[in-house]
Image (cartoon, rainbow, N blue to C red; front, side):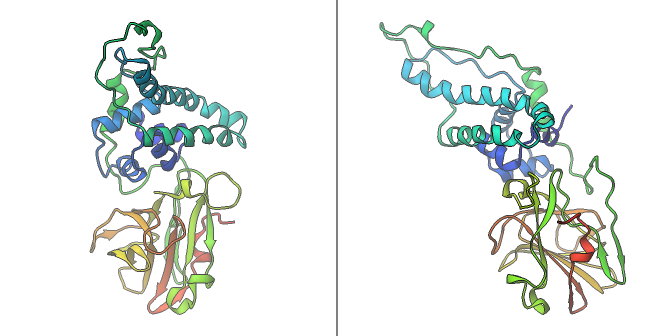
Length: 324
C-alpha cells in the first residue's frame, strides 16, 4: 500500500501544490507525511479525492443554482485527478514542459477549493421549470481503489523514522579535523542550491553571523523554488546533543547540535517544524526538522552554521550537496 509521500511524489506535487488543491494547510500535510500527526477523516477524504483514489459522493437533486455552485468544485477535483494520473507519463515524455502544463490548473483549482465550500447543501425540491434530469448527480469516473483502501495510508501515516528511507545512495557523514562533512538538506526531489553564500549580505560579519543559506531547486533552472523547498528534511551532520530555541530573532525555530566532546557545533535556523527536543542525543543523518521560513527570511531555506569552539567556520567545502 502506498504512503502519502509516495502518492504525492508519484504525481510530482509539492506540499504547496497539494495545499492549493485541497485547502488543507501545507504544514498539516507535511506533518502527516512525516508521521507527526494523523489526518482527520474529512482531510483524508479530500486528499484521496484530489489524488484520484476515491469516488466522489453522489450529489442529491438540487436546483440549477445550487448545482452550479456545488458541482463545479467537485468537477475540478475530478478533472485534476485525471490530470495528475498522467503526470508521471508526461514527466518522462516532456520533462521540461510537464510542470508548466498543469501548474496553472493547480493554481486555479486551488483558488476554487480554498475560497468555496465543498459541503453539499440540503436537498431541495425541483421547481416546475427545472427537472432533476437536467442536473448531473454523480461522477461517471471510476477510481481504482475503494474508499477504505484509498484512505488507509492517509488516515494512518507510516510511523516516524529517525532516518529517511530513500532510493538514493546513502549519504556519507563524518567528523574530522576540518569539521562535520555532509549535506544538511535532503530533498526527496530536486537539487540543493546556495541562496546566500558565506560572508555575504546578512552573513557578515562572519565572526558572528557566518553561515550559508540552502534551499531546493525543483525544476532545474538553478534557482531556489519555494514550493520545492518547503518542509524539506533537515539533517544533523554529526552526532551530538540538541539545544532547541523556538521563535527566536532572527533565526526563528533554531536547533544547535553540539558534538560529544564540545569542540564542534552546528546551527540550523528558520525551521518550519522541529522534530527533536531539547537535550536529545542525535546521530549523523538523523532528521531534526523541516525547512521553513520562521524568523527573518525572504523565503523558505536553511541557514546552516558551523563552529569550532568560538570560531566560525565556512561550511561551503564541508556540505557536499552537489551545489551549483
